[in-house]
Length: 200
Length: 98
Image 1 (cartoon, one colour):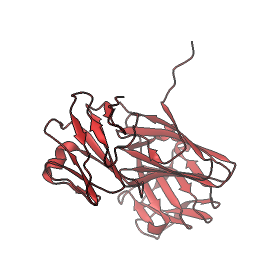
Image 2: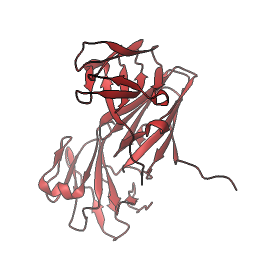
Image 3: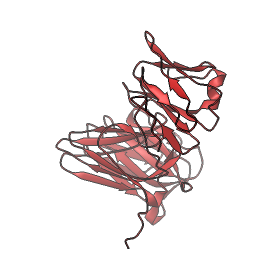
């Protein structure tokens, strides 16, 4: 029998969320490609870590002795042709594809569907009372990539305004190039690009 | 469940040199200097502002990063405060401290 892996590990070759839950990064390895490369990590939009490497070199940063870096929603920006980032991170939750405008979100645990309806420049994602305070929603601006916001849905009813996203009591308005993630029960994610529910 | 943090962290870009934490005795535990598009440097001064004695200086070539983990040797004491001053285009200092 082989030993147990100490920390879950992610391999990333493109920009994207690492986690949308409380987590801790304990090591980052940047595999440099054919050009100079870098990996910048953001937590709720704030830069919290970065590492760079010259072309055809690699750079590993072991943060375990320091207790790592804690965050709520890590986002990774990668630059460099062929660069790969390996991350060891406690508290990893699988991240599903974003829901974008015109797509249908189906809640797998209660069978209710939420449809993103189209508008001229904004899109509305209806939220109902069926969504409890345990659910969270994150907005992701695909244009800038690093504008990550994670808020408890319970706050949305108070007219939360974040990142040019105005959330009235009955829903959330998404600007163009923004996507939405839903989290259920602190464990599962429901996301879909074609209307089919996917549960992690 | 994730583990409990050991040290405080702070990000200090070259565009905004800053005091690390609050004024008072601090201990620097580690620094990662993210080198930008030019050669970079970061100085740590024993002061709350851009004055005082430089107790640590770290350099990095353009496009590289340098990680200095002082926790193995107990860190460096700053009796007054820690002022972090990175320099170099795109340079960022990530600081672990107490």
